[in-house]
Structures are given as C-alpha cells and as structure tokens.
Length: 327
View 1 (tube, one colour):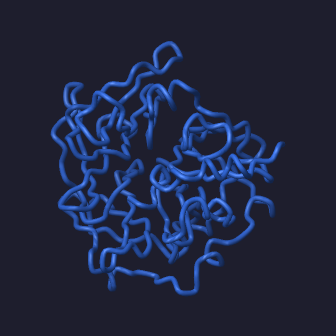
View 2 (view 1 turned 120 degrees about the vertical axis):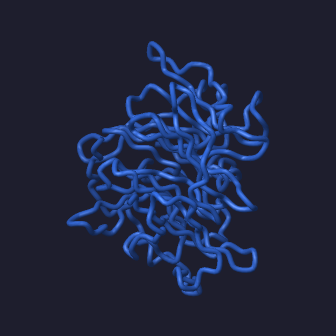
View 3 (view 1 turned 90 degrees about the vertical axis):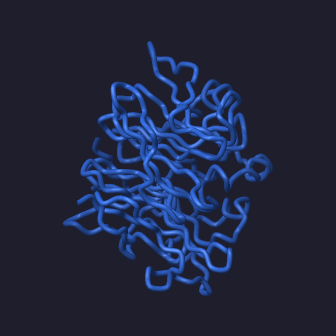
C-alpha cells in the first residue's frame, strides 16, 4: 500500500544523514507556530482530484452482514491528499493518522514539505475538529513519522531519522506538559533482531503484534507476536493460523484480545480480514472488506476505521479514511 510509511520511506535515511543538525484516553496536544508550518489543505496541489464515492470506480466491498456499508469520514478529516495509517482511540474521541499532500511525490522530497507526518483530530459533540500536526522531533532536525500507536501517555511510531539502526525504525515518546517529548529509539532488539514493521500492542501492554518478512515465516510478509515477560520482549512467534505465502500485515488486536484484524491481498488489492480467538487459538480468517481496503483500527463499539485508496487507470489518485459502523 503505497502510502504506508513503511513502504514510502526506504530512501529517506540517506537524505537525513546529509541534512542532520546538532541539537485508554489520549492526551490533548497543544499547538504552537513551530509545530505546524503549513496546513494540510494549503499544501495540496491545485491539480489534485478529490475523489468521492460517486466518482469511485473501485469502491470498498463489504462482505459481512454485521456492518453497515462503509462511508468516508467528513471533509474535516479527508482531503484531496492522502490520509493513511489511522489509529482510533477506544472511545472514538481521538483519531491519529498519517498525511501526505501528494502521493506522486517521492518520500525523500516529502521530508522537506513541512506537512507529511502524523496528525491528530479530536471529536467534539459528534464532529471531528481540524487536525493538528503531531510534533515528534526537534524544530531544526528532520524526520518522517507514521504508523502510530497511542496508549495512555505513550506513543509508538515508525520514523526515518538520524539515529536509526535501519532505514525505518520504531520510536517511542511520552506526553508530558502538553507536548510529546523524550522520544527514543525502541531499541536494537525490536528494530534489528526482531525486524518489526507496522505493529499493534495489546491493551494490557503484554503482546506486540507486527508484520515482518523476517526469516522463518510462511513467506512474503507475515504477522508475528512478541510477548513481554519480566519487562523484556521475547522471541517472536509466527501466527501460523493467519499467515500464507502471500502478504499479511498491518495488525490490530481488539481491547479484549480476542480479535486479530489485518490486511491481506485478495483478488489483486488490499482487503481486511479478521481472525477470532477460541480456547486461546486464532481461528480461520474471515473476509470483511475488500477492494483497496486496508489497515483496520477499531473503536470500543466495534466500528472499523480503515484506509481506502482510489485508483484510476492503475494510478493511485489519493487515499481517505473510511468507517464501517457495526449494526
């Protein structure tokens, strides 16, 4: 999925190295002029095409009777740029997501655009509010961040920046005094030894689900789990019940730990599947949404927020965040 940060940023680290300078409820982040240099809307090219369901020739397809037909979130969230990698807080009051204004721009150029990265919107009186940029780097240093996970006052995220062990590493930051601060690399074990890609941590903090093409899997990209014992992440185990020789990734585990949602390619495009746990074992995955639908994240009510990419003549135009409400 082209907009996913793990795919986009493979070339960025070399640029960063040459440009470096020295130097569940969710927290509400304060916004200062140095945190938002540009608006999302103002950064989108004038030639951009804003897709809507009525002009979408490849709309997401629902395969489950447990949900209403999916719809895009409001224009406060979805622009003519690309909104991607959503993460919804349990009570659906806060939505984090990745944004880039133009999907045709290479990642090494997005690094300098002042807007590509993680954004957050808060819901008030049932309406999403204008999104704010999430600042996770010093003002004079470069970074490109995404694939965020938030629990309490802690955010985990993917980042291409100086200080990485590889092109894209997982980093962690703490929310304090109205700002995210004290960001640090998640460490050599997770980034190098375990080779974790996009990920989700269970609500109790005891299990880390992630995708990776690390050796020992079923083939391609697989979903793995590492369990924390005595404060240490243990050797990952392959989730054999859901993995195939193809691609499975972008995992999300519900708060009760009984549903594993993920992306798998189906009939040539990303689709959303769910595996349910019975007697401690993951079951056969069920197809829920298909046709350029991926990266699911659920709120406590079971509503599915996901990414839909719009394609015309084999070319991606933009990406929006959709929701399929549970009946």
